[in-house]
Image: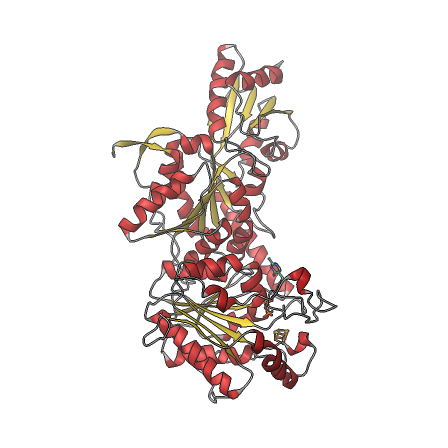
Length: 351
Length: 250
Ligand SMILES: Cc1ncc(C[n+]2csc(CCOP(=O)(O)OP(=O)(O)O)c2C)c(N)n1
Ligand code: SF4
């Protein structure tokens, strides 16, 4: 077993990417994710990789697109305002079926917002992230170990399904220090990148990477095929954690750093005799709908806790088909609820 | 035409360009350069958003289609990921000099070892003839129906001159495809730009004064006259930077 190393969340992301064989990083500075770029700037030259500070987030995502088209693992990271600028590129990546990894260390919005942690980019991340019909796989770590593990997974999933994987995290997790086990994930068998633009070498027909289809029938067919792939992803890759849900009357649904706050609130609720549990989505897309539906058979109420005015709550309500009340616990703009605030909602839900 | 046989680097498919459009000529010149330098097998081309969007079907090398204006960023990613490849972009003036200005200037400033073929036809072709940053003073377009009013829209951007203020570009030349003599020179310039990249010298851009008879509202022959009489005086042909072997301007 490898020894654990004390690391910041952002550094764990960068190290995981490098260990996953990502040798191409493109980014533009923005708080609170600059440690990722700093780590890459230091390490890439030493391992024959490329680090490039782009002129904008728009350029950075298009550089990722170019490197991905060349068949290489590539990554960019940013925070909310910068990720919004990447939307066009995210759409092109989807339209070109290119695998890429994008990290969003979220901060408060809208506009320039603030630099404190937030989960207000849930809609942007899970409902497409750009124009057109498409999805990204969205992974939501809840600690530094998961910042590391899910970054590695993000690359594998991207390559396996030819999609963008987004690591949706926040400033708390980015800055937090915890011990990390730097063990490599179990290897996956991944499809060869026969579509990569490496030059024909005179040995094959030209490869074309493109998202333009003038014939609507062709475009519809391609989008539908992509959605079949999305259905496979939903069937095989949906991830979540359940905590004390077996006998729960009320279930908090929270992800990321806020799930940790929720666990404290649940412990306090249990001490008071309230049977509370937690469902923590690890993949936000695909969303653990079936798990929620199953819980809705038992639990009387749900609490959607979010660092936003309530975005994931819509998916929760859909998953439980509005058969159970879903209370909301929202702080936004960079504010984080205390366990007592979450506890209050649990009391309300079971009153 | 200087080129009689179809270059091998050009795919055997009909092009969709309007009669008299010079995009087709420039495609040939690019393909001929790739043939002559024996680069086709290691080349990756980046098609723009613009009339040349379907360029990904016209070259016998690996091709990608970039978002509007982002071709130099995509080319940067391709090149950094695979430094042995030869990467070129083919962009119009809306793509390169308006929406993609940042990507153009910054890839040049980095001295990115890529080649840009820049089609300056003084108009947005694909969207039906709107004003471009390169539209001439007084020129009538769909969005300058009374002629380009430079008191409100400024003077046209001269890309070669602008990029020549940067230290890093290795090779910048403006050519035209209005006459056989100028096409010959354009052929030399495009070949030189690719050689520049293959030799690892850094950023090269060839600006090609081109035509858009359809949106200029003139015949193909009149378009060639218009390039000569109106465009070239404002956009002087010549070498703006040459750090290649034997180049005059290091
Ligand atoms: C983001 C975005 N904005 C606008 C467009 C619409 N559009 C398509 S082509 C084009 C202009 C192309 O003109 P130019 O680059 O001069 O090339 P030409 O067609 O003249 O060869 C525009 C504005 C687009 N496709 N994407
Ligand atoms: S619209 Fe203009 S630039 Fe486009 S193909 Fe026709 S003539 Fe050429």
